Structure formats: C-alpha cells, structure tokens
Length: 234
View 1 (cartoon, rainbow, N blue to C red):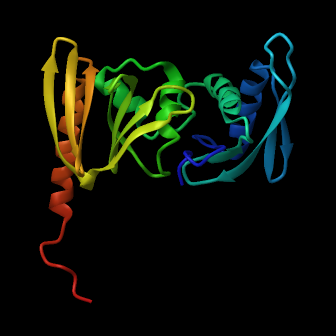
View 2: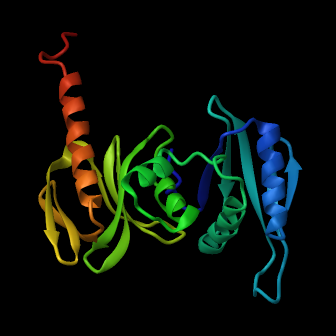
View 3: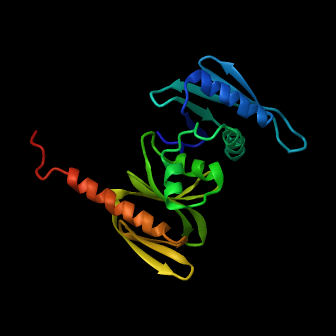
C-alpha cells in the first residue's frame, strides 16, 4: 500500500505503540493540536484559529503495531492539502530518528543532497510501498518543474517537492531501457529511456545524477544475477 491514494497518509514510527502515541501527543500539542485516544485508533483534533484562518477539523488515525514499530493510517477528508499540512507540522515536531523514511534520510546523507527537511522526505515516502527502499536521491527539473528524483529498489520516481508530493515520473526499473548521464554548465542531466518515451531530468547538483546512474546499474546487475537461466517447470 502507498500513501498516494487520495486523502490518506501512512506513518511508520520506529517505536512501540505506547511510546509512539506519547511522542505523537507531545508533537501535536507543540502545534496547538490535541490527540484524542479512541480504541483501536486515535483522533487528531485541530482547533479553529482566526489568526491562522484555520477551520476546526478532526483527522482520524488507525493504529497498528508491526514488527518495525507502529503504523498510523490517517484519513484526511476532502481538504487534502490542508490536512497534509497539519500532519506535516506534527511530523516535524517529532524527535529525529523516530519516523521511518524508507532510506530517504540515509540516501540523501550519502549523496550530499540537502533536502528541505521532512517535507521533502514525506513527498517521496507517500508514494512508496511498505517495503520499498530508497537507494539514491537527487534534486532537479523535469521540463520546467522542480522536484526530487528518487531511485528505489523497484522504480525511478520524480515527484514535486511540495507537501502533496505529486508524482511526475513513475517508472518501474524493468521498464527503463537505460540511463545516460550528461553534464552542462547548469548541472548534471539524466536521459531516461522509459518505454517508448525519453524523459530528461536536468539541473541536478554535482554528483547527484552520477549517484542515481551508479545505483541503477548496480541494482540491474543484482537483478540479472538472481534471474534464473531456465524457466521453472510446472
């Protein structure tokens, strides 16, 4: 399941249920919100604010304990953008290292990409499956639109870096015929052969396109080694 379904956000906190709910309570109150515990889930109550031009609303969350920690599936209602902003405010108030970002934080640190905090992480993570892992990240432009490039163990994504994380490219790895790295005065470029189309991502920082290309080739070599030579006989 991904978060990209309309009106939903999935969090995975690296903590047991009691600790996760306690951390959430502290982070919510820092934003002026109130968490209401209602078994088996919870409700995040956002009070009305005239100063912030914010109407009152409630965001219900379904809580599940997993091997990794605690999952919360938030239902955002019709005003999706505003609900995402509320949840992002709470997420940014959580302690570092408690939210599971599918390797986004590690990948950005290795590549030296400076992303705009947890909003950038969330914009990518909300498009990922539960066990999907980020191998490399970059920032660049697709046509004239700025966003984030994320290579995972399953696909290549380009998403807008806003709170909604709208995907502009979603290419499974086996659909990519090749990546060609180029360099211009404005930065590195990637020419992506995805099916019948060719997509160009430009204005990436020094080494960022190289990191995506190197990890893509490494991943494809791993896939080739694990592919059986002969088909399985039924």
